[in-house]
Length: 241
Image (tube, rainbow, N blue to C red):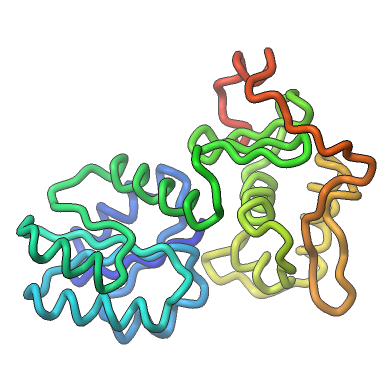
């Protein structure tokens, strides 16, 4: 998932970005609030490493939240005063972590707020016989592990975190190619076609002149997938290799 990291210190930002990258995110580093405003639309989640006074942090949090209304948002700060934590949370931050903090904990907190924003209570999203684990980066169809490439997993994750929503070609491209490669609608169609072969064509509908939308598979009887099939219990290696 694409992540916007607001961090003024180059060295600290580099280390944090590398840690988040190892845990499945694609960080875009910016050094100022003004830069963040220009990059915000491409990010699925925002991390703000605050090196400001308490008043400036609260003001910045309010500004980011007013513009990025629907994006999960975490604040990192060296100070641990409870008043500042309360002020930031009331200003719109989804979480507040005191530094130093390991990238693994930040990643876990990010998964929590991403699940919450998608209406999920665990790392595993289950829908119509299809299951996806955000932490293990595995997916299953009817309890059997899917052999997905890294790009296919990210595309499936995008669809399952956006149930019922139409995803445009551009949105899919940004998720699959976060480093700024030249846009190709044909390449998006190829990626979607490959994912359809593995999860079923009926699950991903083409919306003419708009994009794609994930829907319940045709013929689905509405019964929930068993929480842990034998394959899901024994499969521990990530599919997105």
